[in-house]
Image (cartoon, rainbow, N blue to C red):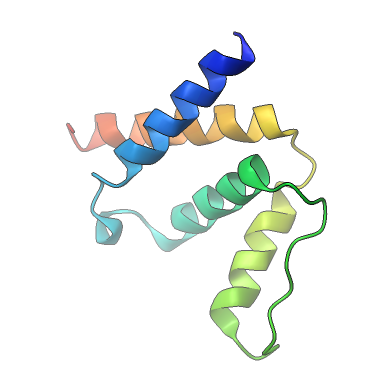
Length: 93
C-alpha cells in the first residue's frame, strides 16, 4: 500500500468515525482510538503534557497514547482504519 493510499484511507476512516455515535463505543475503545489517532498524526515523539495532573481524563488520554507509542505512524493509521471499519460494520453504517 502506498503512502498516499494509507493517508487517504486514514482520512476516510476519520471522517467515517464521525458517523458512529460516541455513546455506542465503549470508553476503553474510545481511548484506544484516541491513542492511535494521536500516534498517527503527531509530528513530535513526545506527547503534550497536561497542565493539571489531577485531570483524570487527560491522564487516561496520555496513557492511551503511551500504550501505542511503539507503533510507527503507518502502523497506527492501519490499526485505526481497521477498528473504525469494524465499528462501522458492527453498527451497519
